[in-house]
Image 1 (tube, rainbow, N blue to C red):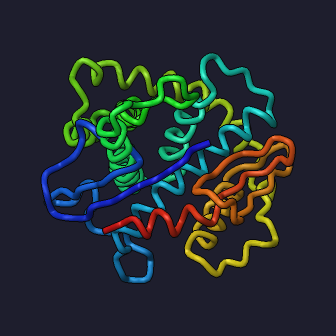
Image 2 (cartoon, rainbow, N blue to C red):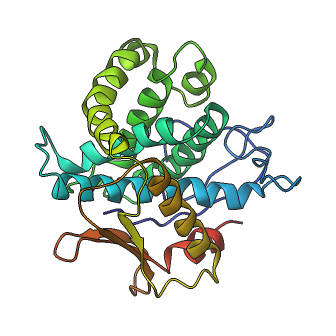
Image 3 (tube, rainbow, N blue to C red):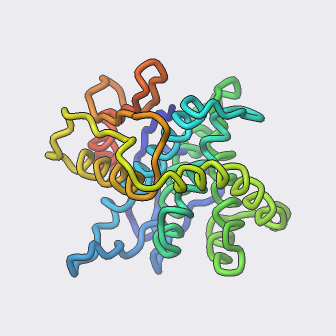
Length: 269
């Protein structure tokens, strides 16, 4: 489960990579790494960078919750904290489901959100909640940076450099990603071997009227086009009275709260 409170500052200013959370602000870089030219939408126009930023973080959130669902449905052993495991699953999915350019841009978008949150943690006075089942936003930031760099180190020097990944950590990132990819890759390969299907079922209440609903529906279709789970997993977008997303094992359901999309977009300034 991830609670996101992101305040984005989309201004052309100095890079932010040494301290932040999914919570305070995100600056852009000249040349466009954190928030640069939008991806092509296939309609001849460039995607709005704020829209792209929101979608990158929604996709990571969806993959994160899908990781929880797979651990439950497949009864997977987890060696270590589950929240750390599903963070890494999301990273593997980003690299498996998206082309190189998109995956790299997603890395910058997601890292920017974690950076903003870590900045908020560091200025809140009490610091990160060390008792929480999630890692601190700064730790999640560097784990993301390391694994995204390690997934293709010969082509992603820019990822390591611009996200401020220390050389001492960068030296082990290829090995770290290979270990993660082997563990989660075996699971993903089994699901792909099942062929395309409709095991992820979009709830009938999702009307497709909002950007959030359209994007979640597209991600559900993307996963269904590549793989099948051994059980039907409902995916719904509904009001939760909180900004959140979570997996409900009792209902075999991933819930993306409607508050999440407007919250992310509305906090951009």
